[in-house]
Image (tube, rainbow, N blue to C red; front, side, top):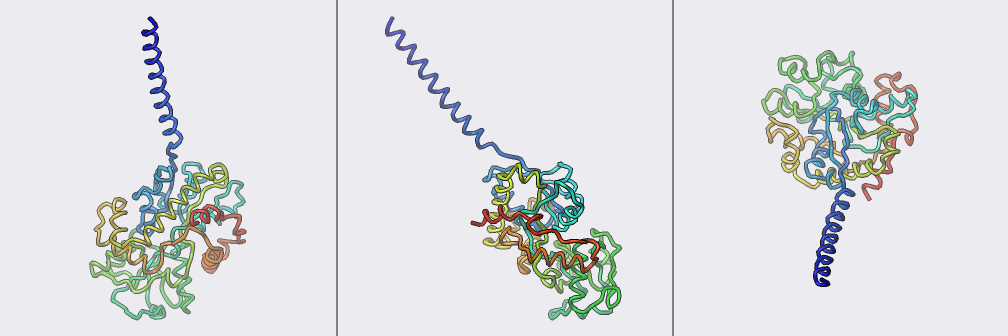
Length: 338
């Protein structure tokens, strides 16, 4: 009888031990539960390659983050997605944050990381111009961007910087939809066109145009596209913002250390139907103008340069310049690069 009780006790102890082990495993698994971050990008572009690399190379997952990515198709739309609470983090030009802050919104957006450091558009002409000079566009016509959009502002800033007055010395065509500018140029409208990639490379590949200059290289270093959240989300979720920034910086490092072809291969799933050689060409072009930021830290002088460009275009767009430390929180980026 004693032997029987002993056997039963052993079985019970074994059962408890097994249950404890599996409970412990379950507890450990739940402590590493993934957090889903709703991210809205302004547009789908190879210009944002480090972000797509961070997603496809598993850098966000290593940080415990699942990215739910949506595309806003416009900076104002991306901002609205964040302000309404439909998304956690937005990704677009920082000018939107400046505009909203100046509207005196209580829960205003705050920038915390940059991804690109210059305007990503290229000037495409009808012939190859190895020694292109901006002054050569005098008396010509250029298909530009949407009036009031930063790409158009940057283009006009570069023209003025080179002593060319838009509307007087050069005819700027700004009434064509962004998605139709490449086609319009192909159909013989304008002498030049300002285009983002991959449209510029595609025109060049088909011998319908030639990249003659980089608008971004001429405009200077800018925090062109940045990540932001509302002030309240950042205060409630500092660990999420930190892990997100860590992953972005890892993506930035990966792009710098890998070839154009390797970057193209990593991000091609985001661009179905696009030839890999076009993707390689685009990555090469953006690397050549240092468009991809090597650090997520936003510099005050770069943001001031962007505000110079905007105010030079139309001073009423930014009546007063916000305090840098009010609209930018670099603490997450500074920690990520250590």
